Length: 223
Image (cartoon, rainbow, N blue to C red; front, side, top):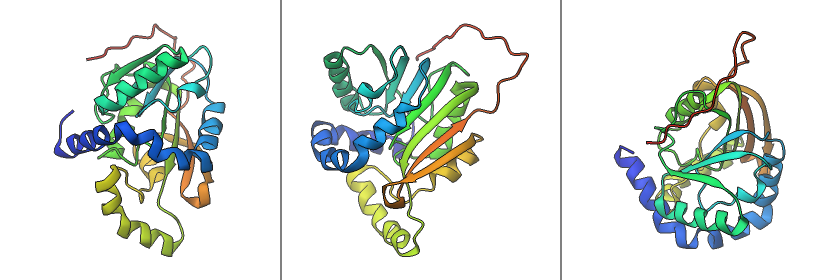
């Protein structure tokens, strides 16, 4: 995990780990929890990569029978995620990793998913390009992200507040994640706007499966 900004992001989330769930509880009760259930409700079982697992808020929503690999840049967040997985009786492979440099071979996942993550990745397009690389042809990419408001006044306010929010939490509140997904070469299949226009559920895919392709074994190379 190289880069000063990535290191700063790691430190920010390490600092927040102990109080993260408590601080975010109001947002979960007001709508994020419902959005997570909707998000995961349409995800197919299979080999799933969850990026930015944090404290493991999504673990109870993973589809039954899925093999899930979860990554996060923060060791302290991962420690809490591991405890949550044990409490829930979930077998999840947790890996300390940077979304901008995923330690997996090309095309090994059927699904890549992330909730409120690419607001925090220092170079979101680089991270999304990595997502595209590790998802197989025809595989699914699904993101739930808070984004810059389309309303001019609200967007202007978010731009002004963004540097303060980043320093406090690590999250950018004014990103155009749909554009970033397209720039990364991921095919956008649908966008659902929620949360007063500042949350988007983005459904994408890595192209279409080739008829002549033959499914091979799934191999993970964690390093």
